[in-house]
Length: 430
Image (cartoon, rainbow, N blue to C red; front, side, top):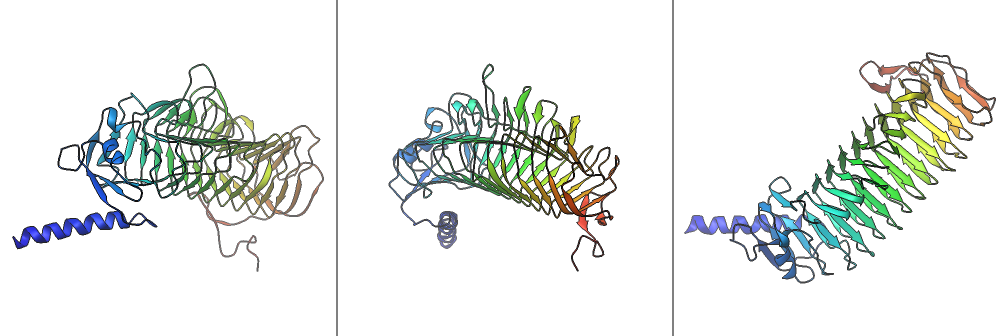
């Protein structure tokens, strides 16, 4: 009897810790869901229907299928949907018969979905989850895997909403209409959405037209400490193998990694494409991405903003144009304190563009030059930069440059891919 009592106390403490671990939430009633029949309800939707505002629906481990375990809807009740054993053990399998979650009743960030794998969901937009009309729930520690949308957001779509996505994973999701345009294989946001995406991994997602990992249109997402790896376009599409941002003033990307995104299917911007937008990109790494042009990132159609403290290395242009960064058609971003090294050909291309490039390192292009002016009418302003060891020479295009230092930046371990500066680097201010 004593042992049974101890076990009951332990299990109760475990449940309370799980609920308490969802930060900032008051404790209401707890409704348990168990596919095996030992809980209060058998299906997730029944558990959600039984919840009052502030309650927790605790879902025990298992694979949940069938009509009441897909197209899940809170109905405007703010609640916590919490798995007891985490995403690996708690799977919502939509069986290619519907969407995972639908939020359309102004649910706020006290509505939390935590610790689930959502898979084989299918919809026109937002296969894994769709948030619209100001609904802004939180997704934490969730996996969006192998979901599909014909329009936008194979994994998740937010339209006029601002969800929080934290510590999640988007993998093998697809947006493909077959005949028309499709954006955001992993995630799409549009119509004034402002999601916060932190510590989230996007890998092997595909879109037909743009934004294999994430697509933003008329929105201002904030991405922090995210990874975009091996995302692509699944037809000969526009751009943004990792991320595509269009008409997205105010969007920000900070301390993210873009690695091995794109193939020849991506016309421009294998890592990032920015179109008609002023954005802020800070502390990001663009490494080993491949596109027709602008292997690392591409700014076009009067785009601006800032790129600061970023690294562009090992990027490839199959057309031999702008392996690191392409700046086109009236765009004028400021590129500051960035490092360009070991890109396959030219580090930066300018075409009808007037960027400011300052306090940067432009070194060791494998077959190109530091900055290339495509049409001869560009006016890049390059100053206080280190330019060294580029295979086709260190001459800068145009005449608007000053305070250029032709010295070896002294990377600690360039052969090993480490572009950290040695202590005796001339690039380090005394």
